Length: 101
Image (cartoon, rainbow, N blue to C red; front, side, top):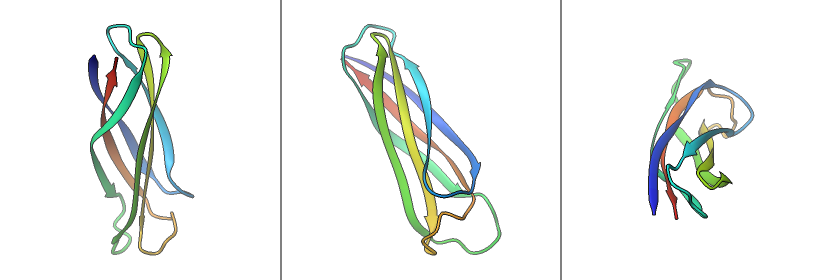
């Protein structure tokens, strides 16, 4: 078993829903399976254009083997307030570990 930790940073954004970003992780040893595990996150509204109350936070991870020593982690990340629309500026970081065997 091999465990590697990393993060994905999401800069300031306003748009139409959760967004995705990827990070390739070198495992250091050959693995045949890999799973990404959420270890933490940091999220904030990045504008001061009104009072924001957390309505929905969407953080998901997926891992795919690129080859025997590299894993691509895809993070889905979204934040909206109680208005129900994805119109607010937000940013943050998703922290994860990849467990390979």
